[in-house]
Length: 223
Image (cartoon, rainbow, N blue to C red; front, top):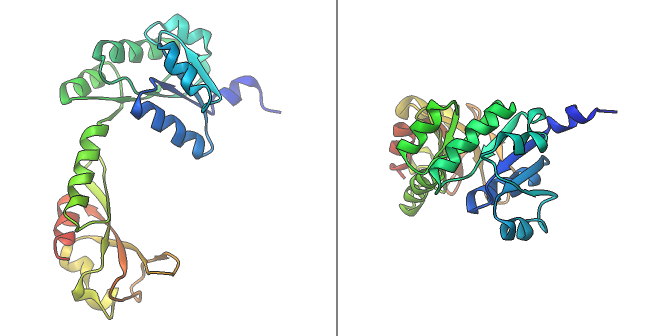
C-alpha cells in the first residue's frame, strides 16, 4: 500500500481557477491525474467544488498556507493567476519556499514572463499568445490544427498537397523538398497510420507534419 507522501506526489496543484486554470484542472482530471485546486475567492471555490474533488479557499501567496495543504509533498504546480502579476510572482515564491520544485506559470505579457523566469519558473506559458497564433493559422484554412513549441518547433495537421496525390511518400519526396517530417496520415473512415516510405497518399488525406515552424508554415501554404 502506497504511503501518503507517495500518493501526494501524484497530485498536481493548480492555483487560480479562472478560465485557464479551470481548463487545466479539468483536462488533468480527464487525463487521469488527481488535482488539488486553490483559489482565494470563496464563490469560485464553491462553484468548482461541484466539478473538482479537491478545491480549497486559501491565500496562495503565503507559504505557510501552502504547507498546511501539504505542498511540500507535491512535486508539480500550475500557477494560473494572470491579471494580478504581484500575486502570480508571490505565489511562485511561496510555492518554492513550501518545497514545490516543478512549477508551471501563466504569463500575460513578455515582461511578466521574464519576471517569472527570474524568480525560478522554468515553464512559462503564454496561453493567449499561443491561442492567437493557433487561431491565425486555422483561420487561413491551410491548417486543420497547429501547435508550436517554445524552441521554434511545430506540429500541424494539414491536407495532403496535390503534388503528393497518388504517390508514396518516398515518391513525392516531401521531406527532402520542404525540410519537414511526415509523422502520420489519416484517411476518411480509416484508422490513423504512422508514415512510412511506402505510405500511399490520396486526395483528401490528412497529413500530420512536424519540423521547424517556418518550414511547417511554408509546407502548409502549398495546399
